[in-house]
Amino acid sequence: MSKNLTSRAEDYSKWYNELVVKADLAENSAVRGCMVIKPYGYAIWEKMQAELDRMFKETGHQNAYFPLFVPKSLFEAEEKNAEGFAKECAVVTHYRLQTDPDNEGKLRIDPDAKLEEELVVRPTSEAIIWNTYKNWIQSYRDLPILVNQWANVVRWEMRTRLFLRTAEFLWQEGHTAHATKDEAWEETKLINNVYAKFAENFMAIPVIQGLKTESERFAGAEETMCIEALMQDGKALQAGTSHFLGQNFAKAFDVKFANRDGKLDYVWATSWGVSTRLMGALIMTHSDDKGLVLPPNLAPYQVVIVPIYKNDEQFSAVKQVADEIISDLKERNISVKFDGRDTLRPGAKFAQHELQGVPLRIAIGPKDLEDNTVELARRDTFTKETVILDRINVVVEDLLEEIQKGLFNKALAYRDSHITEVEDFEEFKTVLETKTGFILAHWDGTSETEQKIKELSKATIRCIPIDSKEESGKCVLTGKPSNKRVLFAKAY
Picture 1 (tube, rainbow, N blue to C red):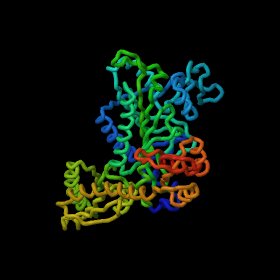
Picture 2: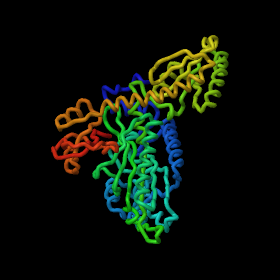
Picture 3: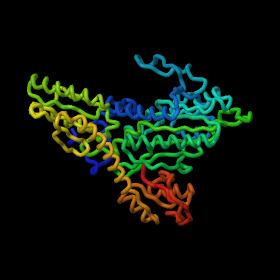
Picture 4: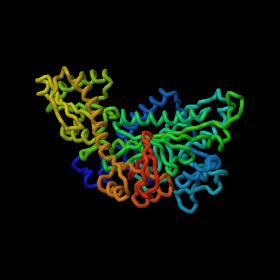
């Protein structure tokens, strides 16, 4: 299976597309620009979802659900937000079909079923949620509101790529309301930290936290924080964003509250989200030319047991031992699968599980039963070892932890070796084309220079790192004064 994969060195984009399909993660659908997430891919997303959901609830957030459709008049209320998403909106104009009198067996839009007001299929939910919050908030006693929803959104894309950019995708979007500016800003930072911890502790992906420039901010936000990750091809990927919305949406929807002094004031807001784009990040950070490499914390099953046998009697004996291993591993909260399919030879099973990135594989045959051992194979290093049966539980537990840490450290070493400080634009372009990765360079702070650099190099300012130290310097393009470096890269 993996032998048919294009190598990363030959064509990274083709390798990615083939891997997503061959590893049974997702495929293109009959609807242009939309994907089908297959069970194995969805199982990874469910693990992501479960961990993030736990982290949100631990920080006091609750889940709710809001309509898929947003009346056009509500969508227009916050002008910057509406303008920012206008070109990506799918719009419902009619509510009924009818039999086409001119084409037997076909349907047409009923011309008499035009909606009085068009409905936008949500590209994001600020408008419908803030219209709702107006009914929920009267005084400071009603605040804060800490709400998240798991949903699908539609952003009309013509040039799509599985997980990374599709017309419809899955995500979570948090929408919070606060009595003070400081509370809302602390919420913005809190969630960006949650995203960073999730990326590093579960996805094994090191990220850089920072602020977006004005031109890269979420439409309608006063500030946007983000986490940026570096993929194996040297391109950046925005893995999550947290937005400080100020009072913009409260003013657009006239959401006021009586503060502790009895005076009316507008509510302060945040919104934040991550999506199935994280699946793309996971694939492109760790996987290799033989297939997926999954961190144990997000693998649908962390261990697979493959029986080696020639007859039913041998199968039964192996299965009995395997069942004991499975029971013991499950007690340690380790997910395990017994691959007892009789339609594939062991070699084919090994190849499939290798392609799908299962962290550990245990093979058990009659000879192993005689020796009271099993063969244990690691997906990340391809190393194998013979382990005494009585120690398998401890060894597996330790190895899974070792693999998780190892994948993070490997990605961190790659990321850190691909952060380059440059002083002039010629060096900037050379690093971008030869070494790739992140570039730390001075910028004069103007949108004009930012746009010019993008036009000349196709690199964008990924963020202004929150740990950026103050230092005097000259803009990499214009030579004008600058007081800190920002992070540039080509990006997905």
